[in-house]
Length: 118
Image (cartoon, rainbow, N blue to C red; front, side):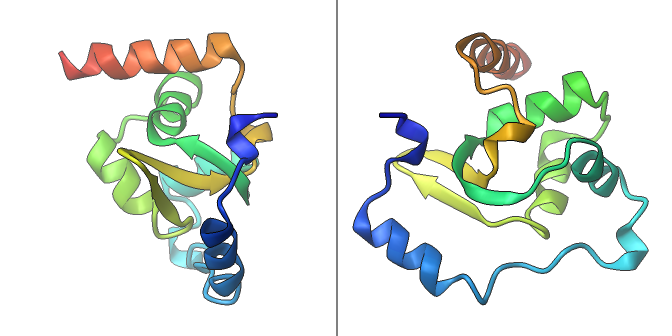
C-alpha cells in the first residue's frame, strides 16, 4: 500500500472536522502573485496526499522558475493550503497529480533541498 495514503484514525477525524474550516482561496488582489500563478499553472488542489515541503518548493523553483525565497514562498503558500506535521516532517495535504512523486522526482527534490542548505 502507498505510504502517502496511510492515515491514522486521528488524522482522518481531524481532516473531517476541519473540512468546513478549510482555508479560502487567495483574494482577488493576490490573483497575479507568483504563488497564485504557480498554483494555477500546476493545477494544485487540496487532497489527501502528504506532499513534503521540499517537493513543493522544488517544483516551484526548478519547474516554475520562481524566484521567491523558501521562507517567503511558504509564508504565502500557507494562506491557501493547510500545512500538517507528520513526525519531524512538514507536509501539505494536496492532490499528488500536480507533483512528480516518482522515486526519481523525489530524489531530485531531496538533492535540490540538501544542495540549497549548504
